[in-house]
Image 1 (cartoon, rainbow, N blue to C red):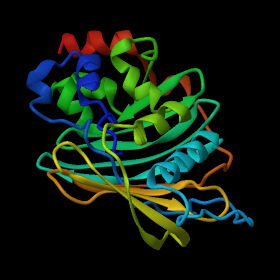
Image 2: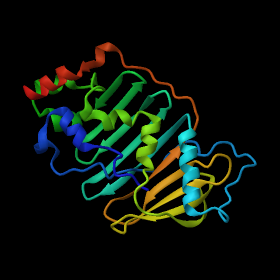
Image 3: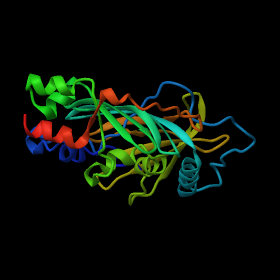
Image 4: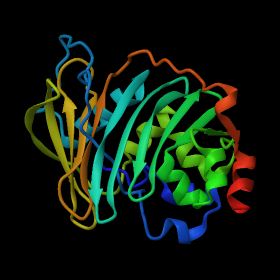
Length: 265
């Protein structure tokens, strides 16, 4: 239930041409995250209610996935802690391919991602530039406060660009896996009435999905409560308009030029 493809450190390493020396053994692909701030996840309640007594756990899970697939926009935010450190994410996205937000990877720094549905812009912080661009002051001066663009057609960045696409991000959040969910209990998350489903992977590590029981049956929170990597991710701000503004050309650096700059450092 908790996808292992949320973020791809390997894709970032390949993109930047830094090789395994810069990336070490960091693995962000298992990390999803969680508590959100902001509005509650479910839409305005209607007379529709989730019948958790009559429906099986699989049927309840399908309703949550179907509701998520029908959303026109949402916010995903949270964190996960592992031996490598803490990964955090806070992204809003819509069905038009627009997105904006930030992601931080353990020991590597953080970056801002923006997409207007066509072009993608990624703005790493100083630590991220140093991790992959080296410590050459002249190089870092050229990269500081700049957005990287032109990487959307590179297959090595597929995981990153797909995360700006609502349908793909939703699939990555709630991939099917091979385990079978079981019923949990009623509760309240972010002010929304919920019902939980529990699921164990092939290593016995448990995830819990909290689903809105009134209105649209959106997933409200996904959390991993046992195992090596633990954390949670919240789904909020469903169907709210997403506004994106591309950065000015003066603050943008082309992907190819960036790679050349790193390689020559």
